[in-house]
Amino acid sequence: MVFLNAIAISLLSFMFWPIMVLIRSIKKSRLPLKPQCDKTVILGLDGLSPLLVEKYWANGDLPNLKKLAEQGSYHRMKTTTPGVSPVAWSSFQTGVNPGKHGIFDFLTADRKRYLAVLSSVKTKTYTKRNLLGLRKQKVSSTLLRMSKPFWSHLGKYGIRSTVIRVPITYPPEPLDGRLLSGMCVPDLRGTQGSYTVMAPEGDDTQFTGGIGCTLRHHEKGLWAGSVPGPEGCEPVDVFFKKEKNGNWEIRSGDEKIKVEAGKLSGWCSVCYRAGRTKVKGIARFRITEGPVVYCTALHVDPSSPVVPLSHPVHYSRYLAGAVGQFATLGLAEDTWALSNGHLDEAGFLDMAWAYYGERKRMFTNSLTNGKDGLTVCVFDTSDRIQHMFWGDGFEPGSVIHKMYLEMDRLVGETVERMKENQRLVVMSDHGFTSFHTCVDFNRWLADNGYMVLEKGVETVDASYHGVDWSRTKAYAMGLSGINLNMKDREGMGIVTEDEATPLMNEIREKLLELKDGDSRVIRSVKFARDIYSGGYVGRSPDIIPGTDTGYRADWGCVTGCVGRKALYPNDRHWNGDHCHDSDLVRGVLFTSWKHESDNPSIIDVAPTVLKMLGVKPPGYMDGRTL
Image 1: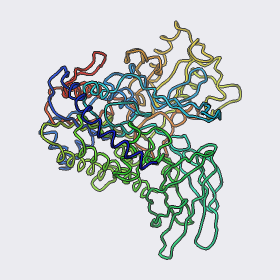
Image 2: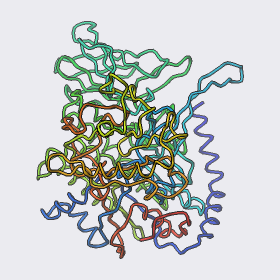
Image 3: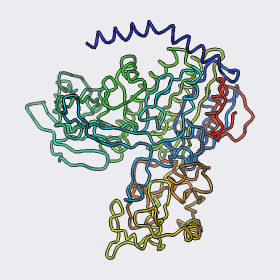
Image 4: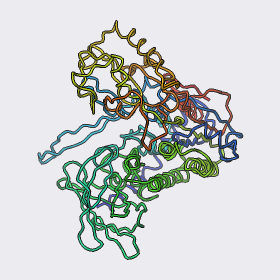
């Protein structure tokens, strides 16, 4: 049936192809402006820092980026406030400030319940009856990023787009072209990435970022581990057999793959059953002495997706056939496993570069196939490696230096594939700086009397359990903001409208006075109502502190914890970041054409590309054309 279905679709596509060409021609004849190029390619290098680009130029490195800057243009590009990926990439694709698209952080506050929830996706489970009257559980996801991505405007005029792994595109929205979703795609367990570690002495426990399981010894050289899957599915046994040469054979179902000891395996299928339905995932394994088996998060199988990964739905299947199986999880590189010690640095880098290779093959495929008017592809490798290795330095031979050299080679290869009358944009959503000290804003609020804990409570482990809301005026949630406990807005709010402004001014003045010895901790404090405009400003935190270099909101602030100290050392492997004052973490913008703007912003890219391809930018966009 699959074979016959494929033939039928191919025949229908062939029959309707002339009609589609005619419709596209009619749409293009209605272009309001004269196109300045046939095609625009946008290469996104997440987190690429202008500070390091310029540093390496001074050393004679990055020749391809240097050549692009000389023949076209290069600028440090203004990012959003705050300069975090979901906010910045949302503004990139819509051309508007966060107040118009409604994304202000990775997480947002459920103000009635004082809970942290994903800011960009809402997922709900419901029961539906089929034709036989049998109940079946369904899951639906809704994209919460508002406003329209600029490629939707291109489609109105018959200009096709290929969009690959741009953050905040899950679930995928329809467009004239093809889209593979990026950040916020979940794993099979419904999380944003939980790995499994199996060992002979392991416990069946959960911890931050993953799950522990016992590795069972079957016979000489053969081990088995039960990999937990989606809720409601029985764990699946995966077998590991040590060979005479010291390498391993992994068997999952009918599939067998070989892997060197200490190396990351290729993708292996892991199939679960939910009633009569198969739920297919893919995972990579790494086996070290013990043996200890590390299993990546269970990625949704792109060749048989159980959640929507792409538009059209068969695009992920096409890519899996064209370039091989690939990572589908929104945040694929396993930073938690490295921080927890279940991956060493070599293992993490193997993973990061393996995923980079997959993305590169997709990008090359999109450049060499089809005549799309727009191709956009975002690479995450630059961001993840800087998060985990910033503290190791940037000198020649360092991990970060090697990464920048590879990004430069990618730019050079992209330029070589560009054809006449095509334009190239190379950009990052933000830059980077160090993260050596944590700022517990909730502890600071408690120390200064703005948050009150219940009698006998000294610290709070999660979700504000132990906070006395009847006397609390403000609380921090997420990585970028402080909320007032507003009456009639929060579940147990006490701050009135008349009290809000004096309270915000008072908090700002005290935050700016915060010192770590002689060092300034807070570089700026902004109010949402002053820096955002649009219908979704109310989703934002009320106060946005911009930390100075080296300081960042602590890990507990994300989910509502209160620690013992307002300032304490960051002892995690995650030692570089961009959740700081946005002026400290500007991104880069390279264009293959020259323009006069000396202070471009990330919101300028959308209207610029529209105009280049002959489409008048809509009036609601905040960006200007370059």
